[in-house]
Image (cartoon, rainbow, N blue to C red; front, top):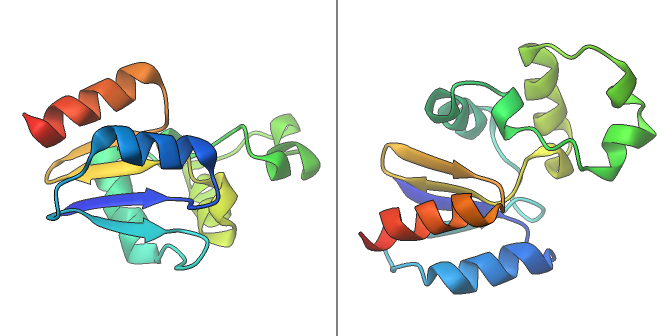
Length: 117
């Protein structure tokens, strides 16, 4: 599978998608318009190794819900991501059996190399 989970209203996601210049073989999913399914999240977790790796601690709700003061389990991370799209670290780029999570320069460069390599 070749897929990108992103947020169309996020300037960073827009910039990264433009920079990646994805081939037509990639599908994109705006996670605000089309919610992530349990199956999609489980597939991401299988590639990432954990739900925590997919979880964004930068989400405004993370502090609002005082989650930063709690010890979260893998099950908690999974439920939170399914509960609200902002908890998914974005973008998530899946290139067959590789996954690239987040917007760090290193991650984006690795994704770009994999996509066009």
